[in-house]
Length: 101
Ligand code: SF4
Ligand code: SF4
Image (cartoon, rainbow, N blue to C red; front, side):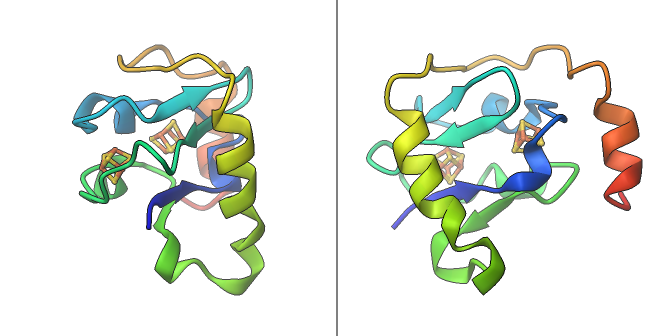
């Protein structure tokens, strides 16, 4: 079992989540973050930190977001680990409003 980052993170990338993660399981590309399911210890600490509710326990993923489980597993491998909160992407605030947060 692991936690999964879903599409709300795209274009946002506030990275509040990585600061609380006790292990190094967040990986980043230019758009968003992904959780390595082999590293995630299922603590759930990242979930309340995300301002756009992008992170789910894989056991509670809504059906329409199921595909993100495989995407996280595939993308996390090979992308750099991110462990420190960085600057959000330039359009992050607009994206957050668009998503209704
Ligand atoms: S806090 Fe949420 S939106 Fe920001 S990087 Fe983490 S998962 Fe993505
Ligand atoms: S559930 Fe815990 S270990 Fe997994 S990504 Fe979130 S903070 Fe990291």
